[in-house]
Image (cartoon, rainbow, N blue to C red; front, side, top):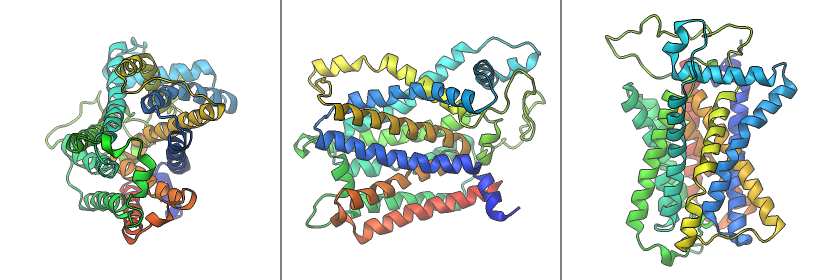
Length: 404
């Protein structure tokens, strides 16, 4: 088998690589549409848009099921039972292996997992929105994107794995590249980086507490990094062939697994006529993402009337059909990006995925320069920064391909 084909398989195969490209493009589209709806259409309702986008996640799993029912031989009942069985066996593995009879669904554990996932995905985003109103957007952007560095640090600390010099250098290069793009993409005449121009939603006069904003962003970045690491460890299926490309959780020296706890990487947990194993690519993470969307829809509407009454974000509906269409586009691209990110967290792990997501900075920068008229923001520092991010991801992708 050619070496290039082997590397592709180790990276999760064509579906994972294709999904990664689609995820990057979706983020660029979401960024450009968000800028357009606020700057050009004048609809500045960031929390409302945030609520709509995250609520739209609820559609992902039903649409995936519909696709599989049409283009595969699996029935809806079989797919649904298989997903529930995968969740049951993941959250209660001992109970699932005690007898042939199907144990009860671990409802309490699932709700706790869902609450943690929703909080971990929502809290950093809301903290970012608050920070943008307090600190310069350049600072917020730079600090937020340090989550790649914290993802690596937390991975080592939580999993008690060894420091890998190549991965550490790649993460530091990527972080330095972000700083170069954010702070180096400025000219004397322009006075504002392209990143800041695309994210600026509030007058600078309102930024009265830059230190508070910076600290909020730093905290958000750490929480988001922890979310990525803990998702890989506790939410992703460790026995799924999809996620075997980057299994990094080590067994502490002197410890051993009991026979009933051991999960062979090559063998499925279950072979049965009424269960699909392994699940179709992306179905399990899309189930979790949709559950987060439902949870968001049921809970996060509560702050809308509160922030309206406090005059923080007075509620208003879009006034034109174009605005409705653009918001729908933001929801669609946002759902694609977050769904792809959740799948890739399981396939590649938090380190490669978080650094890979930094490529969105490169694409947004190029998009702004070509389509947004921000050519004057192209400097030697921004070009070097983009190159550093690409190089760092290439190092990690090569390292991931070699590991298995």
